[in-house]
Length: 173
Image (tube, rainbow, N blue to C red; front, side):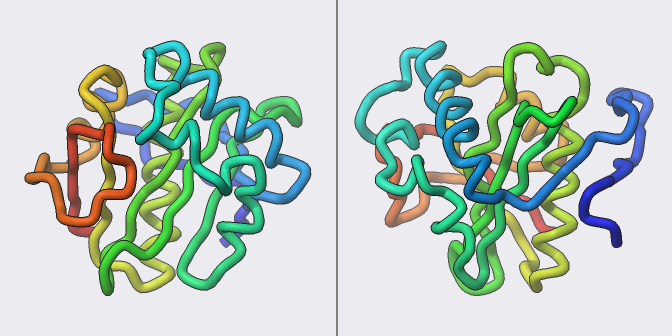
């Protein structure tokens, strides 16, 4: 499969923009992704301890996601990073989907769903059989996205790293 282009499946409820461009995270994307994460969290008052805002690796995510069992992809538009999402092992054959963020300019165009489906396909290719994610109740658009894409809410798992997160979801892949 060509990793640079991905055409997600269109559904009646979710129109898909023409040919979103996904690329593996590279060091030259690190600063843009870090700013994307921080600006999104700031908008919702989540620039506080216990969120990804203060992750030690946030400014160098390409190093973090270079490890086995991990992956991060950026969404590019006209060569600019306008979104991204990663995954890492959570428990056994379950991965955790991490840091799904989009630039305000591209929100509402179906790109979150396209990015999520793209990453689910990568997770399956890596051998994961389920995906877990955590979010916050203030992120209402994200909650709608996850539910729309088939994620079911679960109780808070033990060992959650981002203590401020208060909503947890899982999906069989």
